[in-house]
Image (cartoon, rainbow, N blue to C red; front, side, top):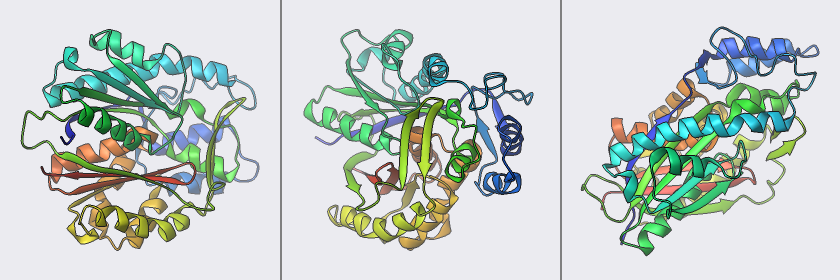
Length: 356
């Protein structure tokens, strides 16, 4: 049996702001010490036009962050906002995925939830069981705090469930509320995170039983931990939100290590780079896209969907790569498709979709 990706659904909060508006809000909330010009440069080089957020409002107000002290709200207050906000967009994305997959909620046998931006128990998975009307016997798995590549980790788990049981129907849902973790500092690493991350959710339905010949098969998922890179990216729980560490060396480190790994992934599928029709490369930032595409000798058009999602939505952590796959499947619809995402470690995850 081979697992198939039956449908993807996406959702973002209703409140969206232009990148320039968020830039002004961040400067006002956390006035930089003689670095305003540099901070504004970081925002304007991020490749983002708009971002959705549950913590900012189109009026230009940021009530959650106002009057919260020099370092912003404490972590407890931020996480308290997570469950309601994440559950709402997780529900919307899941409903869309189920509709596209032509699968009823009562048919779902396994639920996999993903997030690195908040914690609660009972959590998003319990909220989805209630709001979607899933069976109380649904098998629950939570993939937490893995970062931007976690959707591929979740699809790997979904693939294993589907291929072990011909009757399995697996719902994967990634819900990230990154805007909760705005940091009130002008440190370079933090400035990049403040300029990139946004809120969004994406869901996918996976099964070995496909109702259509058009559903792509998940033929491979693979992982790599890049040697000597553990200090390049980190995501930790601080006293005032979750804190991102993102070294400027990340794009170069990926460029130096990704090509051999990707060629190995493809070789095991009897493919090569030129055989791949579509690339869904997670846009950790515009430099990551440029570096990885150049190292793989891809045309700029190969990362157009990734740049488009980054521009329209920002970096929504784990949900982002599913937004890109969805865009490619709706506009390109050509396989094989290879998805790549990178996160703390540095670690990489790869997914191969083919027609079967």
